[in-house]
Length: 460
Image 1: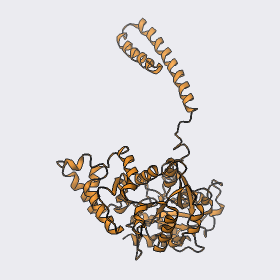
Image 2 (image 1 turned 45 degrees about the vertical axis):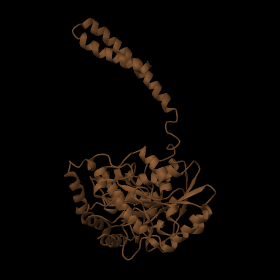
Image 3 (image 1 turned 135 degrees about the vertical axis):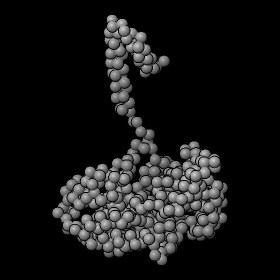
Image 4 (image 1 turned 135 degrees about the horizontal axis):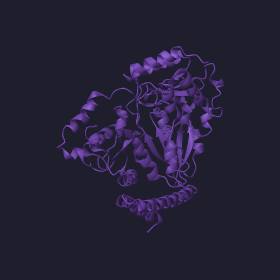
């Protein structure tokens, strides 16, 4: 019996003794002395054990060097709440938000789909565990969709894996295919989960910057430099992460750019993780080209999609991976021993942005910023370097300028945004710290509030 179990037994005796001896004051007094002694022994012993435990490396090597996610400990969440700011940085029920996700209601037909499922409790197949790799009706729908868009035969049983959001599809891909020391090309800026997930899988993220042209006007001015990618490739390089449409830049890669990447992939025998969750958020006459649809790329690509992004219901957390069976196999092995299956009701029936985009661009211009018009997604990046004053802000001198500027905006103007350098790695942060990111897919109330603040905008 362990020491701690002995203590638990003693505690039980004390509790029982207090009941039995309640009316015997002499015995009760002696029992209280025993109680005090045992408590002191336990406190000292536990304290010693805890201190000893803290001295050890508590985290596994997979996570000890991974910093907390920017969204979980982001200082601007509490700062926005503290300042009661119009938040164009994150979603929070207690404040007006505009920076991470949409705050507009879900499409009525989507809500109706889930309601219709809830109205039929007798359909046990809708409310119990579904097929582990995806509800059959959903995987069949995805099979038809991707067979058409990719121009290949996507088998519903073998080539589709449904996951709890696209995050898990990414995580499975890295965990399933990376070994210790394998390198992964990541285009900077990048969505912030790529780097920590790669590191947790034992991989080494290798950033390659999408440099902006000298006078950027739209997201197409984020320039792909294939030579820079080639220079970063070594004999340990195993894969490249391609986020298209791109978050946070809003860039939609052209056919020519994708073909250049495909040539690199073939030349160096790389695997491609195609994060295409914003595939349905493309504006104007722009065309979304799925990487796996290029010649010979389907057999090298894991394509990741998201129902939450497609239907603006991100809280439902439903995503998928589409790939040849041999590429999905390690993902399936992780999935079946991790979450086992996804929520069945969400899967069963889960089969005007341009106006807000233009308005947000106009609002930012009126404040003296230079918006970079996205071709896709619902985020917009803006250059604030032309404003008088940001460089003089002393708050946190060692932090990137955009972090300091966003803090100042939140405290002084009650407007919260996201510093764009949060999406860069290493020294690339300081080289790209004159941009902020906002979400323009917002309610009129939020857009009106932001416009009012920015119309009267002046640096102190």
